[in-house]
Image 1 (spheres, helix red, strand yellow):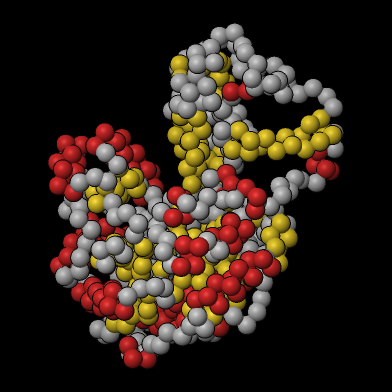
Image 2 (image 1 turned 180 degrees about the vertical axis):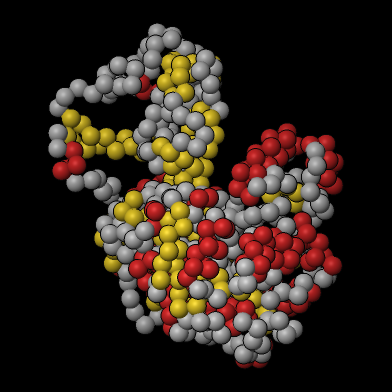
Length: 588
């Protein structure tokens, strides 16, 4: 076994890995950016080294910096966790070239399965059904239209690489196809470095079910059961459970067998996840993709099997054969997990970075909490909004569900808005209780209940010593906290702020009620408007990214752009003016 492992990650997964390695007697080495200098994973590690400034590309995605730290710290292996560099074949090759072990599958396997088109082909060769699609990368709009005629509508445009819900667009009719292709390609290029996309039939009312596998370099493969991850928003999971509930035994057995068959066929080594779409109405399942890493939701599998996936991955990377055979794997009870993120579900899951001022984590004999923060820590805007996961185990699904609802009721997070109160409502939804929900239920039917929104916590008055009142103002771009002071405020164009937004201005007058402001702290990734442009209502002025989420800032009414105040790459704060805008009088 290795005597030291460098954890090339951050947040809750870094904390999970570091704790596991310390338990195994392995020295755990952390890396951190300037934004994470005092993060929980840094405090827990046996050794911690700086790798760069806050931006992710200058720190956690800087392969040279991570490898340099690995050499300097004497690490024998590198564990990438999930996300970041975990599915980067170039990084896996660089780790091996440096004489270190990569805790995960080999680079060729990562490359083959990371390309979704190639993975679909591998699944088809193994005799596993795939969703009908284009059969390859789309090379032009004309080729897309030809493929769409065969596939039929609705269909889905998907990025051929990457994950996390990026580069996906649902197309209901042919008139939407060209725009969807361009949008998906642009998002894929920005997120994954390549604009390649392909088409699939859109499977309506599907469930997202996955099978956990573990394989070694000696030809042994086992599955560790299945999970249901159907409760999603923007194709990103929010609730996961093991085993998948209300699933016919023959379907369950078919998925598990298919997962093991594919894992063996591609020569996979390490922990991995084979994902399927299940169509209940037709009682059919289709291969979706294979994730070549530890999953965020691995904890619910550990709770029902009693097996440590982190320890299993480490043993495989060290060349050991699996310590178990399939008959040793036993599923006991049921486990459910919710992902806790610094987002406001009542504002379209808008990212809300900020300081966790107070944190009370529930405890109990059947509760597991994987958190990457403690009270006083900040959830930075440069990274993913996920800061913790809360899980509950029970002898059956209903007891696990009730236990998790109670735990969420005990959880206290003071600071930025979080998904916790909304997820407690999700667990009470009739469709969730009955297991009749699908991948679209959350966004289509389970909209946040305004009555259950927690009160808005404004900053202490000391921060606004001359404020006489604090207000929360809701605009098209999101909510803003406004300090009402005794003196008159002036807008960027010299007009008094606070004028009624219904008042009319002469065409060409600067309009303080229509100015495009940033809805959150983040980075400008795109600027669509230029000085002198005449724009329509809802036209995109700029796109802001924070916590892996991109939000377009649009014109609230027709007007003329006088001056653009930001450029791509600029860091902005919530409420910052992005451009000076004047009403044209059109549409008023």
